[in-house]
Amino acid sequence: MLQGLTSDDYQLVLPTILRRAETLYQNQEIVTRRPDKSFHRYTYVDFIARAKKFALALKDLGVEPGDRVGTLCSNHYQHLETYFGVPSGGAVVHTINPRLHEDDLAYIVNHAEDKVLLVDEALLSVYESFREEVNVEHVIVVSESGEDIPDGMLSYEDVLSGADEGDFSYPEIDEKQAAAMCYTSGTTGRPKGALYSHRALVLHAMMANMSNVFGFNDSDCILPIVPMFHVNAWGLPFSATLAGAKQMMPGAHLDPASILEDFEQEKVTFTAGVPTVFMGVLQTLDEEPEKHDLSAMRAIVIGGSAAPKSLIEAYKERHGVTVIHAWGMTEMSPIGTVANLKGELEQLPEEEQLEYRSKQGYPVPFIEIRAREDEGSLVPWNDEAMGELEVSGPWVSKAYYNAPEEDEEFTEDGWFKTGDIVSIDEQGYINIQDRDKDLVKSGGEWISSVQLENALMAHAAVAEAAVIAIPHEKWDERPLAVVVLKEGESATEDDLKSHLAGDFAKFWLPDAVEFIEEIPKTATGKFLKKELREQFEDYQFAQS
Ligand code: ADP
Image (tube, rainbow, N blue to C red; front, side, top):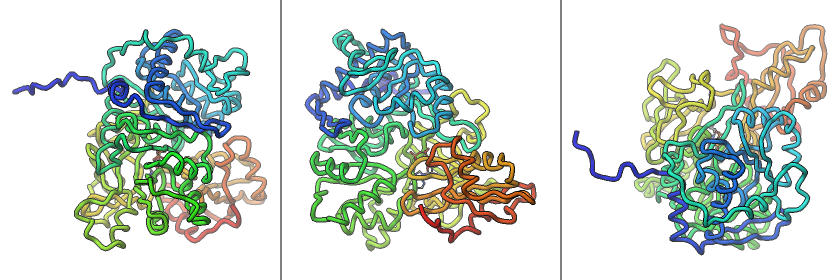
């Protein structure tokens, strides 16, 4: 074989992004909303110096290459520092969703074997809820004041001040080494860990910056509303830093008024989040359209759940803002498809263009897709035939972290089975039609139907229980529990809700319980959720 004569040993690692940024974009700004709503501003020079200090400090704390450093943090500059500081020292930054139930949090921290945990001062109570169950060596508190750090914990600022960035030199890192990790909900079992390599994250960042994806550049100001614990804020901190873009971090201030203020004041050109957030923002915009100026905004990326066509249309028609609908998964770092308009479709009438923009989009470069019917054959790309979407590409998981038993989600030839039922049109745009996984997605967060069902069926009066997702205007989906009582037993909706209350996060609790005679079942006795969903097709919650 004639070998190429290019530098194929050049390692695609996150420090290459940092080195580029520190030589080319020193003066670019990063702005954060502090907890008290005031603004913290600094430049890439400061950011990178502090990221390096954190890498050094972790080493002093005994963190070695490959060790996991957990974060329980909102979107702010310190979290950005860990995104780069942790992997630049060779360790793995493990972002954790603080909205999960304490049992899941403890499980995740233990399963990942987090050695250090970085916790926002405002989220210390979350840590307290599971601290007895875990065994981390150091807890570092992110606090603007640096005061009142609980005994036995370290202050992030103190940790940094003990290090001198001049002592930092980039270690040799293999691009296949792990850089970041994130857990996703299991339908039945425990959360599962996706472990991202440096190479996956670098290629993902480069992909995002292509003009037919998001196309960030150094004139942009990017504000991730999607939390940094939610699949690396969809990779935005990495792609924004690669592009040398200004970054605006909203902290914990995610109410529409604060977000709109940030958009205008910092001239945000690009933002991203789940539909629920942008419905709230739209409502505020609609109430006082003349009060807000979104002229700087190039596009809003909406994903995580289906963005309604009416939402995409409303932003364009009423506020002149383009919505880019995107689909992805934790197992895909996360971006898979993006609904930009292909060049040849730009000639179509507006209404038809909107049809394409409302789908989940066509695969981004290096992601390959196919969909398979129940019988095993691949479906044609004709916009009608439906099948389970399978994906492959350089940032798609090939296994879960330390979970060899979880291999049924991968095909024999190594593609990942998404659990999303789609049709694919002739242009390659996917349309998600259904979900083949027992989960409800509420405001971008997962709720496991199966776990709720098991808990309901543990109630003495319950014979059978099934939990299904009901479309919801604000949260996209909310859980409905459908229950069959044992003969001669009784229980009210309130009885069952309070039975669940202690064991699940509050937002997991079903909005309503409906009592029926029998749950439809397959020949083998499994719940026929599809039929149940049809039965409750027009269901509306009394109040939410
Ligand atoms: P994320 O929420 O960041 O996309 P998750 O791994 O939590 O990542 O969830 C992935 C799942 O969310 C997908 O398999 C799909 O069911 C659903 N999903 C994500 N984006 C969309 C979308 N644009 N439309 C419909 N469903 C979506």
